[in-house]
Image (cartoon, rainbow over all chains, first blue to last red; front, side):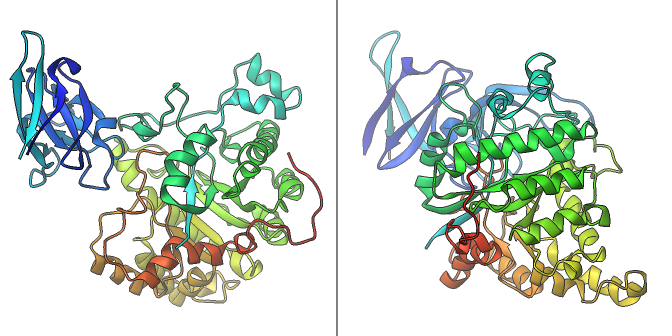
Length: 123
Length: 361
């Protein structure tokens, strides 16, 4: 199954949008490097719509107590309710518990012009 | 199955209270820029501060400030039978550390605004009486003024830096009993850390139940429930998983030290089962067997009541927060029957008991 869910010019780096694929809600994210990623739009905790959250950064783990190294701007998907963090550049892995990941969808970009293209989800 | 939500936060702006305030109180807001004192050194570090990011209104108004939006996002979509409004603790008259006259005026204004804009606009919504409890005489006057409104189900007391079991505050409980109002306690800015603040928000938020434990312990050993046998206490937004520990600790202490509090006539755990109820949110992620074990250790499945805490960031989904595949009978208790049994006015469905013919607001 394949479906065009968005166009590349719908999203700037660091932005996301909701879409629908195979009858399920998905969130299309554009990372800071311009790449696109698609995940389930339901937080695995209590089902919050992730697309209503934020693509932001997060302080990376550190051994230095009291030190904040804010990294990954535009690549951390933060849930709109409880604030759980998922790294869209690491298969949607949860920062606080790396054993949990968002369901990720396979995606390709079909170039239509220099500025625009189809974002295609498939399974 | 009906769903009774025991913690919903409606929000007022100070400007909305102005029509309900007499002078000189009104001018302290319009001219002198009064704002409630705040002490927390951090923000609530979620996407949109204290609120669910998707509960903010499209026009930029804060979450919880619009009935229509709340109806759509919460009440209609979850099939609420009833919802209990608990305010947004701003203003929180009982938390003010001075100027109790202003606090009393704010409490009255809030109650009138709440009745007019929420309780009388949606049959599902019930309310909490706001008072300035630091002045018990003035608080009793306010309870007398609005307490027999058929949709006011409880008196709201903040869990802050006053322990409310002190006999100084007992006139409030006497008035509550008279009007079939329960007491709802909800933390505001509790000094859980030796009267100050822990270094990080995550510590404060983790330890909120300890502030609830302070109040439960104080209310019971102060003999409140022996003195006011019709009074019940809803502990709001501290969860319930601490209760088995507290029951055992209090029973053991009472067994040894009863002589210090001879006005306490019953085992504390029995008093808890007969007089207290605990809202669920914020739920830890529990497996079914863990939840059932906690309920078994509480010795009752009738003292827990589901709450969402809408529209706050740590909202609990009625469909997702509890473990799956619970028995229908237990779900019915958690989601509606326990709250219905707790609040006498809910059992009457918001109808008057025939004693009152006055108007409010």
